[in-house]
Length: 216
Image (cartoon, rainbow, N blue to C red):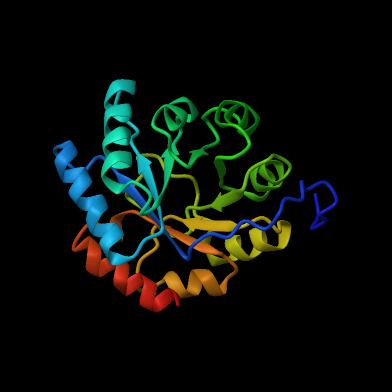
């Protein structure tokens, strides 16, 4: 495959914030708890928030998404995990798909040209394939051990981020086990942004502020 950019789709530069916050629905007992958590993240200074719900049905996901959109309004960009159809229904700003979800081409067909599209990858072959799509950004991981997925892919480590950076000029999000203690090393390895789930749950406003101070 090599490090050539010859087959990569070249897109206008898409700028990601250094911190990509993910609200995983599983720790929250109610919609109100989820909304309070999201509001604390926004108060801390996040600019981009992904809503992630791997177990809920379509009605629950849409209800949560609409509530987030109504309460947060235009204070933050909202990304839907997996569900391109519900991204459009809730008027989110973008969708993020994994390797087992709707294809990037299919997701783009659903959400249109104006909404953001992110794609998860876990190895150089997947990243190279995603770079040839219309994705606005690519994610690589898991970087470190994580408890956010039941069956995580093999760790890529910091070396995996460096390899991914060499393979694409597309904005790159690192995910998996990223904390305030290791986030700077992830950016130094070549990521444009760090996606964080677990290390935002306790004291979300303070956690965001700590991340932003470290990430600059």
